[in-house]
Amino acid sequence: AQSVSQHNHHVILSEAASLELGCNYSYGGTVNLFWYVQYPGQHLQLLLKYFSGDPLVKGIKGFEAEFIKSKFSFNLRKPSVQWSDTAEYFCAVNRADKLIFGTGTRLQVFP
Amino acid sequence: EAGVAQSPRYKIIEKRQSVAFWCNPISGHATLYWYQQILGQGPKLLIQFQNNGVVDDSQLPKDRFSAERLKGVDSTLKIQPAKLEDSAVYLCASSPNRNIQYFGAGTRLSVL
Image 1 (cartoon, each protein chain N blue to C red):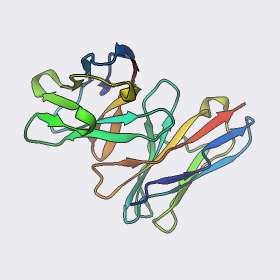
Image 2 (cartoon, each protein chain N blue to C red):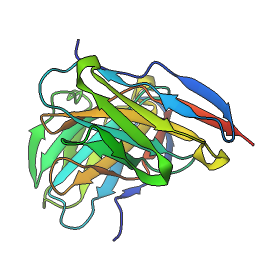
Image 3 (tube, rainbow over the protein chains, first blue to last red):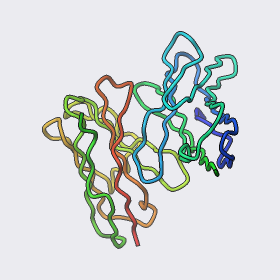
């Protein structure tokens, strides 16, 4: 079945550690890709998006993601995490105007 | 600009009762979505409106769920009667261009 997979369900890091969250999708053809973040008690917010062009996209708060078409991947990265990055992160694919979400990755950053 | 407004934030009901959620999208956004997010899962689309017309309701359990957007602005989602498995967060989102979606804070429903 077509899907979006996030293999890391729960990630625990210390401040200043580097972060990489995996996202793989199984849709062929043209896709628009997103990472959303949900801070505790807050609504889903767009972190970054890829529509076309440079496969390395930069988002807010120092996050970036790389689209690798051959691997059907759109991994999220941050070189040095902060305690305030503690949140749940969702990868999503837009297909036919519909967002298909992964199951999410809960990130906990300890000072 | 004001974001997507949803109410109530929390709702606790007993099974077989009815419940309704309200959403006011960002002004000017023609497309409105309702999602269900069960604990531990990503949001799942229930229904999509374009203005006051339904674009996709293939994932909406129509025997108990209904939604409307009569004037093409705000929308209501109703569950009647509720089941235990309906416990979830119900998210509303709107979009100006059917590409980037902006989400509300959601309504957390607990069915006892």
